[in-house]
Image (tube, rainbow, N blue to C red; front, side):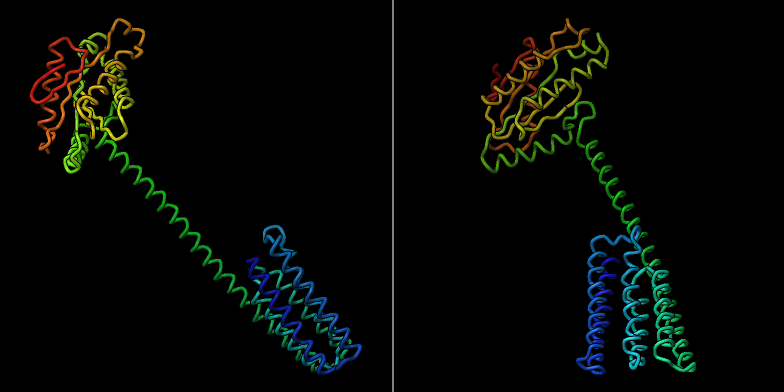
Amino acid sequence: MRLESRLALVLVAAIFSMFAISDYYYLGPTREFDLLVTLRAVVVSSCLVLAFAIGRWGSYASKVWLHALPLWVLSTGIILIVPLRPETLSTQVVAVVVAIMAFYLLIPNLLTVVTVASLYLSIGFLTAAIVTAEISPVVALRMALLLIMTNIVGFFALLRIESLQRIQFGLIHEERHRNRQLLKEVAHRKMLEAQLRGLAERDALTGLNNRGHFMKWAHELLQRSRVEGAPFSLFMLDVDHFKAINDTWGHSHGDWALSEIARVCQQSVRPQDVVGRFGGEEFIVALPNTRLDDARIVAERLRKKVAELMLRDEMCDLNLSVTIGIAEAHAEETELEPLIKRADKVLYVGKNEGRNRVVVCCEGIEER
């Protein structure tokens, strides 16, 4: 709206200044012409300054007077032309009609301000014409009727424009509200999708990959390793004497122990490794681009970290430990199941041999 007001002021100022051409035609290079040019220059300069001020500080909410001031300046300038050039009254009538229509059609959303300024221009111009131009009552009546009709047409035209603008604004506001609601709904659906995806892929207790998601992800890594000719290792991990933990301290303490071991597993492997909860107290880790010797180093580090976990006070008598079985995929192997079976087999070898140890399966031979 401020931009439209500025453009309207510039346009009206340009129209006002263009009548200097007719001034020169009627008066020539005379003192009266110089006075008129000076008057027009003052009015045009004032309008341009006010247009700049409106663009800079012209808030409709707090400075309506700043938008009204240019109209009064223009109106006063037009009225003052009458005593300076009474012989060109017919030309000035056209200028007044054009100015009034410009006020109504080019100044947005200021119906009251525009109406007051237009009435001031009409009454002031008619009064100046009667006093200085000595027009007859008939001419005065005709001018009055013309100005009245101009104001009526302009008033209702601006009233309709403002009504349409309000309707348009209401529609835009409603559309923006619906768009915001739609964005909120989309964001909510994405959040629900993320939650569902998390429930489908993650173990609720430990936050690790659940068995199904682990199998899918690890299978893809195994296939890639076969294509690239890279080694691929996997180890199974089982919490020692986990049933005794549940029986002695309850399932809440057992859940705490599983969560802590899951945290250690995540901290002990690389970002590209995949950790999952295989079921119960069993965990499984896939290590792409890793040979048996390197996998054993990782498993030993993990086992020691579990043994060093700070336990709760009531569990101070517990020696928390894990047993780990490791296997490496054969060069022609493309499925996870045989690899998991070998790792699980050597895991139970470690269980039978006393637990809290890492057991490696190599070329069908079980060794610690």
